[in-house]
Image (cartoon, rainbow, N blue to C red; front, side, top):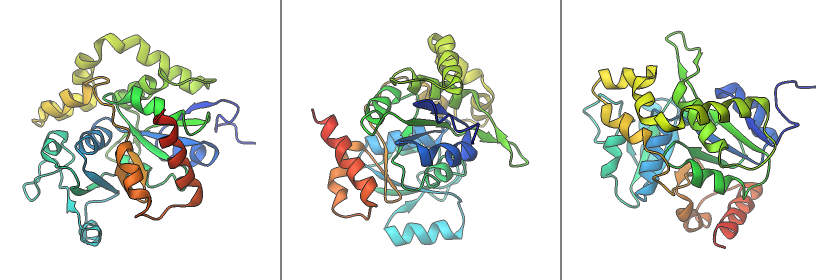
Length: 268
């Protein structure tokens, strides 16, 4: 018996890689949340009609992969060798159909670890839209706050991801696990002060000191997007783009049927 997979509840919430390993195999859909800044980047890019390929590391293999899919490679926040990076502000310039490989040791890594379980990307900007879409896949929903990493590589639970997980859970229907209830009630306790608290939390203060306050502002905007980023054969596309790529990409039969079911439900 696994005491930690929250299997007796419909709405589950657990941190990071271990959370994905525990919850993805027994859930109908997984929602990855990495507010500063993977999830915010994905929302902004997909909202503009761009296609994003998550990638774990920014190294030589990322360059090779970007070439193989005909995409540009995003750089690090401070990098000058690419017009795009994990700084959400840089992605405002993306155009429809543009392809981007986005390395991220947190959000990308988790997105690529969910196997055949349908996978969405949530943040504060699109929490209601993502929750609505997730319920079309089934009642067993896993919400995964990514967290950050300490210098030794261990998980650093982050304020922004936990609160955004609670924001998504606020719009979901079902039986909450204690872990999910904790996230939900944490969000409800600070929901009126999100913008100021995101600037004051550790992750926000770090980015502001580095000169990226605009990124924090973009990430703190609440329910301003109807975009539902969906993982399709390694690529993140907006929900509206999915059907266009169903015939072009490779899916497991389960994933393809789930995508088509989601599209049918959302067209009603």
